[in-house]
Amino acid sequence: MQLSYIVKDLVLKHTFTIAHQSRDIQDTVIVRLDDGEMYGYGETTTNPFYGMTAENITRCLEEAKDRVENGHWNSPEELWENTKEIFKSNPFAQCALDMAAWDLFTKRQGKKLYEYLRLDPKNTPTTNFTIGIDSIEKMVSKMKEVDWPIYKIKLGTDHDMEIIRELRKYTDSIFRIDANCAWTAEQSIRNSEELAKLKVEFMEQPLPKDDLEGMKEVFKFSKLPVIADESCIIESDVRKCFGHFHGINVKLVKAGGITPGLRMLQEAKSLGMKTMVGCMTESSIGITAIAHIAPLLDYVDMDGAMLLAHDIATGVRITPDTITFPEGNGIGAELIS
Image 1 (cartoon, rainbow, N blue to C red):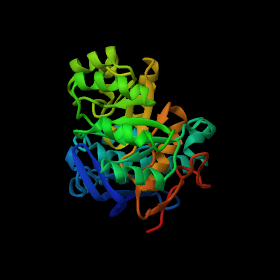
Image 2 (image 1 turned 90 degrees about the vertical axis):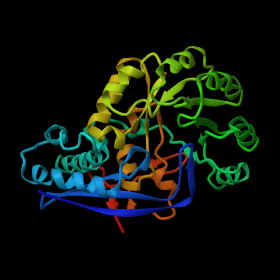
Image 3 (image 1 turned 45 degrees about the vertical axis):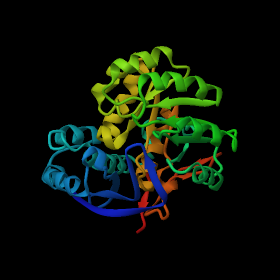
């Protein structure tokens, strides 16, 4: 078994701005596991907000290299358990390795990942398309550039409600809003009333991640469902979110990969919560992995590769009406540049 990795720059079509950061280029780390006959790819992006850099991600992968290449593991779950102490402080690196392991493992089984998980791709929900914070004129322009049935609107400005009112004039598409921790409980409850009238489907992470007391009030009085993102990073967070959020948004890179992500989704479902998986502006490698587990979900945010000026991989093809998986087994994505 050989573990290798490369760092790539993903150039975005437009500057992408959310409440706490802006970027034009997204660094990503591609992991490859090769057993001499078959190989698997995984991906993780960097993220300064979470302290995840290309340097500490690749350093962590180096620390795990001997255990991956020379250790005994027969499944992605077993590899995840065998290496979890190494990746304890770097779930992003763990995600890339876990994803590559799932790709390789299911190729060995002669199955696509969704087939191995016994999922029906016909049940894949339509992804939203994300509109980052910008001038209202430019946000409208981005919507017109990509006509889509569901938009996620990033908020966290001093004129958030004006943004939604203006954007609503140009489309009847479903809106989801993501304030990325920028509001107070009082703002969230007040804004939910008008947002509901403006045909917004749900609010994602309106409050700072640790303000669970405030979320109790929002959960109780909001006119819209609320979905946890920053408040739901790892497996133990799922139960903490119960009674504070109506659902969770699992980010595979934050959780440590597909292996814990599946467990988080299962627990949320057992608690009667809505489930969602989101992306981090990955290439088609990471996005295709999300697509394979999307039939499990109520909502999905897997538009990352659509936000790129140039994709570095091939994989799932997404339109407003259809989703087409790669022909190959495993995850099926391939690095092209």
